[in-house]
Length: 135
Image (tube, rainbow, N blue to C red; front, top):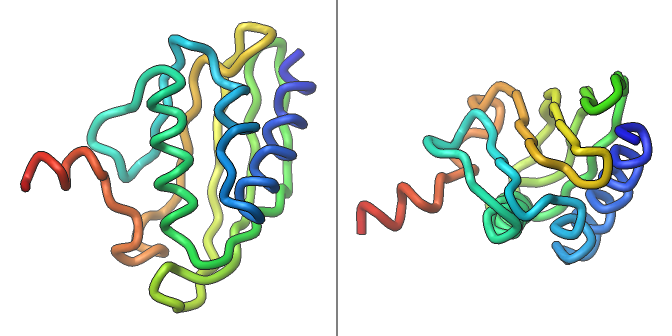
């Protein structure tokens, strides 16, 4: 099951990166999911949180393409090692590596977390919740 969900995730990410549409991606997440990465101070919750996460991810870049080097599966967990290349929202080139961990309930993603070196991105990824709290 985790293998099938990860392949759907890779397809949805490709669509998101090319078209900016979050619909396919958000549909993969459970209503009670948790989603985050190393730049967020608080993880996001539920499908609304997934939509916010993936919308903000895509806004971070002008163009972006992720390629997967390794895929490691267990019954309900997946680790995906990736490289993403493209341009930042300000037009500068970007190339960074990371690993995403997904936990599933067999049908949907219940937890997603991405690990990468945020300094490779500069100041492009912003925790929108923290930003709005400061305003």
